[in-house]
Length: 192
Image (cartoon, one colour):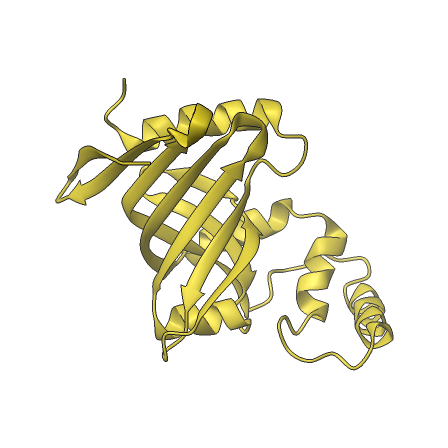
């Protein structure tokens, strides 16, 4: 049994990629604004390692505003087919420009153009307005690479808490927790 939460995450994530039909990297991220009002939404995990967990977004979105006001978050992976979930809590920081540029270059061209066309989280008068903006971006970048918009980047969640939850019969679930203790981790269990 591993006592490294990152190794355990890697094991569970590998199994999820083999069993989940769609978006095994989908995670809920919960943030809170300056007043403490929480908000949760689904994003996709786009990188992870011993430094933490990376996702990308428009930095003018509601989630980015929450992060600017309160750079802490919780993420949740739920893999129904495995009857497992992982909760992770930590602090957030913006990834380096080189990291964001490298990931942005891997996105489909339409996704790249969509990042330019969308005023994410702001009111939209009609779908037609967005589609027109998208077509305008296609024309603007015709024949050239689509560079990353200055308002679009990634965030790294550096964990200080993990909980690995495994469903068991009769709601006798197993819950393992890991807490950061300096440069190492302490492990414990919780009642179901």
